[in-house]
Length: 278
Image 1 (cartoon, rainbow, N blue to C red):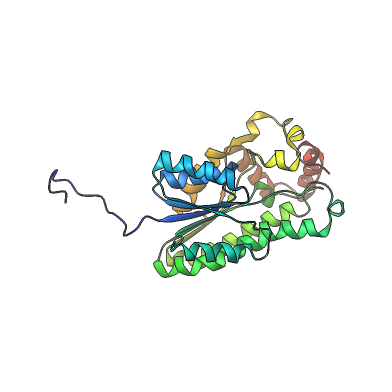
Image 2: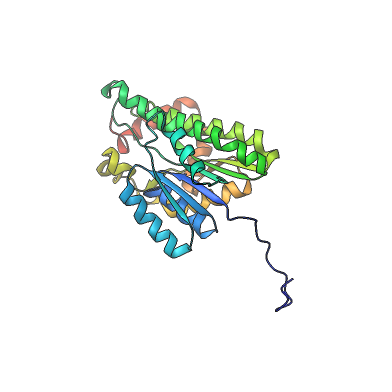
């Protein structure tokens, strides 16, 4: 009770919770950093671009008065996840929420890229997601609180056309991994959500060189990163294991469940050229 006003004082946690967000230098990752900071979390943000991370940190500290730790790390390095967790521990920070968002795309048919490129892709998109979760989950379970968002994709729910050889497969892994883990840890106060956005306005398509191609898609199919992140935050707080962003994407996901597989394969083949280099 507030002795001055006579009103019930808000419950204050013993510490400000901290969220680790990978791939936080732009796009959906930066948007998640915004949402968590606005909701009262301190942050650990990581990516490869230190200058960009520091710009994001300065903005979030000013706007939301959050404490933001910047850790530069390359998760395509097999030792990257372990180094990241070691640095977090060395700073005395405990992670209450994890957003596995770091990722990239490999354009072209499977054999057009060498195995080194594919190895780096799998390391970021599959191994780092599983390893960071495995390393940070025990602390969440011990404290009886945790929130994990694994950024997947609508592609992980749909038939994969040419050019999606590893991308869709990696996202399907993230979805099934999150779904099973959510069932395992819910009793411990830990929520896990696989977030499945469709086409999102970000730097992703610039990096993969597909910006001109995807720009031909109709405007109604696109979402902005801020909306995707806000919906993802709400979903994990509510304990929703799989969340598809946006009504258009939810319609597509429903069609995938009910239309004959042959029809879906033909549709995927006909539309693949609109958004992937093959």
